[in-house]
Image 1 (cartoon, rainbow, N blue to C red):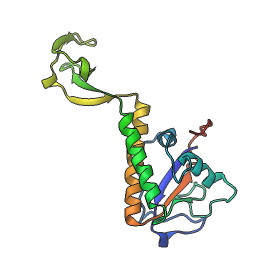
Image 2 (tube, rainbow, N blue to C red; image 1 turned 60 degrees about the vertical axis):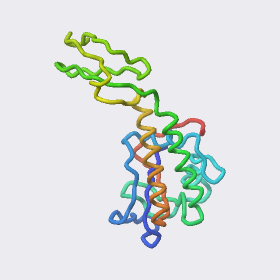
Image 3 (cartoon, rainbow, N blue to C red; image 1 turned 120 degrees about the vertical axis):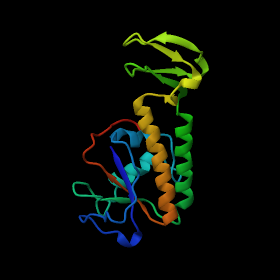
Image 4 (cartoon, helix red, strand yellow; image 1 turned 120 degrees about the horizontal axis):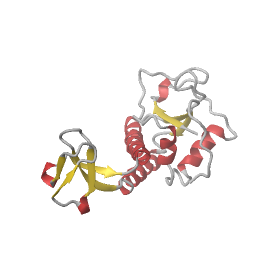
Length: 200
């Protein structure tokens, strides 16, 4: 299941099958990887319940969601968090997401690029030594000098990077929605494939 979060002012809420307004809407800038949002929420809680379980209960529980869709093709939306009563719980969730993103950021590496062919080389910071290597692609010497590196980046797989990006975006989105006093809504993305598996 892929979730779509967004927020609109309370006075702009409409009932399904109408669509909610786009001219006054807040939405996190999430990567185009449907599973990343669900993975981002793994291990987090909202009001003493696993966040993913709450989302499933809202969208597939006994009470069918009734609010308008985020756009044509989507099903109805449900209120995930409503200010002011959910403000403390949502801020705690945002802190959890930021903490998970920091904890799972991965080992840091320095990066260099071959001056001739542009091949990139990354070396974990703890292993950096001033040496010269031959580029595996074109044979040109590449100086692995810390002062000449392109900078640091995290040594993580691309999917984990998308998950951590989702965590940071959701955390910022939750805080901004609460600061504006807007309810946070969730809808299911029908374009995404289902991702069965145990909740966590």
